[in-house]
Length: 229
Image 1: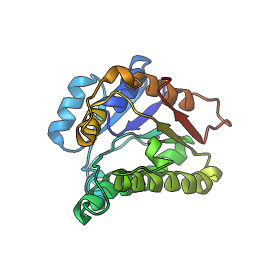
Image 2: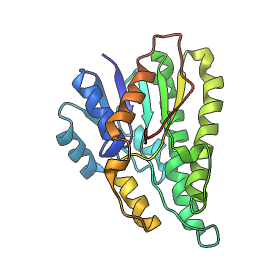
Image 3: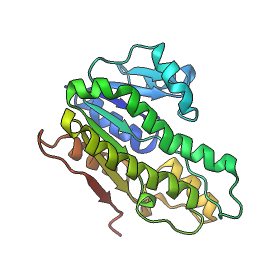
Image 4: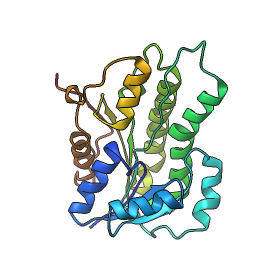
């Protein structure tokens, strides 16, 4: 049985991953932005533990974690939470840029830093659920894609730095997936949302678990998954 810290477990891909791990009896530590959200996650996933801290304010995560008791060993840290805002470069304000970079890049970096001792103790695995936007950027996607390109750089650097400690690092790049975030994206694009066109969150969860379950000494560094159609 593994011990997993998961961000973004409340919906979409994060919820699918958490559900699959819970079904096989693993120990879950779910990250919540506040105490109310923590209670919701505990109801959604009976038996799970919660940790509280606002990923929108990464500079406060050290203080928040210092007032809690995370597990002593962590087999995997799964960065799945994220936020999205679309817009042309000529329209995006510093407030939007800073919000996306804080939640999508700085918070994962800081949370990884804070939990590295427990990951090293378990020779654990850090998984960044990135996005196809982490590999290429299209019109309207500059701020989101920049945060995800940065997340790829974070993962690549971390992989080299932590190899000597036995910590594995994998990035998964999902294409469009039928989640609440995807519905918001369609609204911002002015397009009709048809979830049947896109991958299910559970199919991406299968990809994440496949990376986690590789035998020790084996590593998938980067894994892209796309809708078959």
